[in-house]
Amino acid sequence: MSAEQTSDIADHTPVIVAAGQYVERIAGDAAPPIHGPMHMIARAAQNALREVDVDASHIDSIAIVRLFSDSAPAWRSPFGGSDNPPASVAARIGAAPAHHIYSHTGGTAPLQLLLEMMADIARGERDMVLLAGGEAIANQRHALRQGLEADWNESFDLPLDNRDFDKPFASRAEIHSGMLLPAHYYALIETRQAHLLGHSREQHRRYMACMMAPFSAVAADNPYAQQRTRYSVDELAASSRDNYPVSLPLTRRLVAQDAVNQGAALLLTSARRARELGIAPQRWVYVAAYAEGEDRVLSRREEPGRSAAMAAVFDAVLDGIEGTAADMDPLDLYSCFPCAVHAACEALELPTDGSRALTVTGGLPYFGGPGNNYSMHALAEMVWRLRGAGTRALVTANGGLLSKHAAAVLSTQASAAAALDWRHWQPPVVAPESIAQRPECEHPTAGRVISYTVIARRDKQDLGVVLCEDAGGARFLASSEQPGALATLDAETVIGREVAVSAGERGHRFAFADG
Image 1: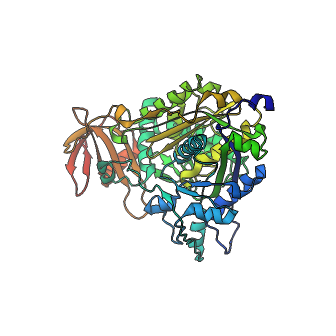
Image 2: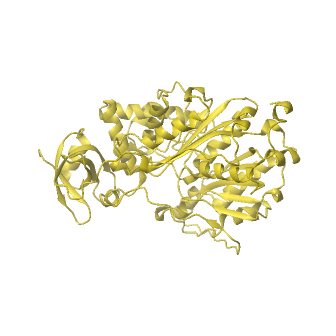
Image 3: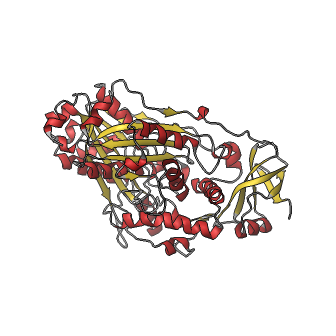
C-alpha cells in the first residue's frame, strides 16, 4: 500500500497497527516459577509493541478479555488472580493507562471489544488501545498435578470497568436435565446435524474427522500453537485412550482444548496517531464490516442443528462489503466443536471437505482454546497475513451454546477505511427477539426424540439426555441413568422414537415407550 493511497484517509480513522502472540510449553517436570495468565498476556503485548517500536507509555487504554477463571466456577484458579487484570498487564509492560477495561464472558468478546475500542478511537475518546487476553490453564493444571505452589494474587487501588455480568445461555430446564458443560449442549447440536445429513453414527464420526483433520495440519505448522500435532482422519475418527468419549458423539480430540498457556494482543490507534508515531501505512489493517447477534436457547430453536442468529450475522457482515465468503482470503471460523464449523460452512456456503482452508490458526481443538480469547489469536494472525496483500479476511466467533455470534471483515485496502464513518456508524445487531422459537412444555408426559446425547461421567453412571417435542411441537428435555436406556442410546439412532416421561427430583426422566 503506497503513501499516496493512504494520504486521504481521515485522521480519526481507527487502525490496527500491531499484533503479538505468545505461547509457553511445559517441558517435563517444569519447576517454579509457575507463570500465570498475566505473564502470557504481557509477553504477547510486548511482542506487539516491539513490532512497531512503540513505547508502552503511549497506551491510554488497556482492555483485557475475561479469564476463564473469572468466568465459571469449573475453571476457578486455586492460585488466586488479579483484581485488575489490565493494571497487572500495565505494570509488566511499563504502561500507565487512564482506562482499565475487563470484558464480559464469551468467545465473541475479542471481536466486540475490537469494535467498541475502534469506535471510541474514532470519536476521540481514546488515543491508543492495547487489546489483549490469555490463559495459563496448562500451567495451573501442571502445578496441581505436581503438587507445586503458586501465588497469582495481585491487587491494585485503581478504577476498573469490570463487565462481569452476563446472562446465562442455558434455560433452567436445560440445566435441570443434567447438561452442565458446553460439550453436552454441542453434542445435541452434533447429533441433530448428523440426522439432517442422513449420517449413521460411524459416517458422522468420519465426517467430523474429515472436516477437522485439516485444522490440525494448520496447527502443526503454527509456531504459536500449544500442541503442534498433525492428526490423520483415522486418528480423529477412532476412539482411543487419547480420544475418549466426552459426550456422544464427541470425543476429546474433536473439541476445544483449554489446557493452554497462550496470549494474544492487538495495538489500536487512529490514522493521525499512527502517522505521528511513524508507523508505516503498510502496517495498517482496517475493519471493513462487522455484525453481531444472539440466538434463542438451544432447546427452543426452530432447528437445533443450526443457529438462525449465526446465519443472519454472516449475511449482515457480508452485505456490509457487498461480497461473499468466497471473496474472503483468508478466513477463520470459530471451531470449538465440529458442529460449529459445519453450521458456519452451511451458512456461508463453504465446503467442509478440506478443499478450502477454514482456519489460519489451527482451531480451538489443535491450536488451542484459550478461554474467551481464541479469536484474538485469529485476529493477530489475520493482521500478519493481510499486510500489503490488499485482500479481505473474515473472522468469526461464537459464544455460549452456539448462542452469541460476531463476525468482522478485515482489510488492508484504503477503500475499506473510507467506507465507514466510525464516529457515527452503528453495526448490524441481530436481537434474539427477532428469531422464532418453539414453546417449552413444562409438564410433559410423552414426546418424540429430535436429538440426544450420552454424557460420559468418570465418577458415576453415564447420563442419557434427550431433546423432545410433544404432540403440539412444544419442547422439553429429559434424562435417564437406566442401563437399558443408555445401551439403546449408545447403540443406535433414536431420533423419531417415542418416550414416556415422568417427573424427577429436579428435571424430567424418560423411558422409551416401545421398550
